[in-house]
Amino acid sequence: MKIAKKIALVLLVVLVGMQFYRPEKNVAVGDYVAAFETETNPSPEVKAILNTACYDCHSDNTEYPWYNNIAPVSYWLADHIEDGKKHLNFSDWQNYDAKKKDHKLEELIEEVKEGEMPLKEYTWTHGDAKLSQEQISTLLAWADGVRANY
Image (tube, rainbow, N blue to C red):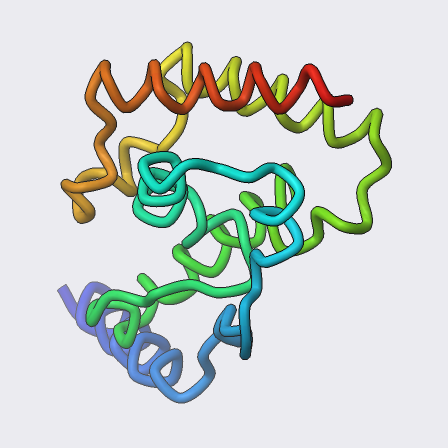
């Protein structure tokens, strides 16, 4: 019993300490997806889908929920965002060559078709990010059309 109390105390100290050392937030100033939207020309419906279901994890600006202020959740979210941006960063679109842009759109289509994106963990707390079949069809049709340009 004594050892369990010591372990609990150590965990409590670590948890409290984590509150003071937070991961850097993913916050950009200005229009962080302007180049992407200018080049791909999404309709207002597609822009709304991208804004609601994609940009938080796949751009240089994240709208953080209140629970991001609690560690270890803040670390978990930071890891998800970093991983999302590694796979596709709409804010970095202008630095991709045509072949890479085509490949990124191909991956977007594949992930959305398979129901892998947006992540289930994201839609648990962002119900509006859960895409309807109509939204999926709209997004996929737009992405297919944009791919034709590359």
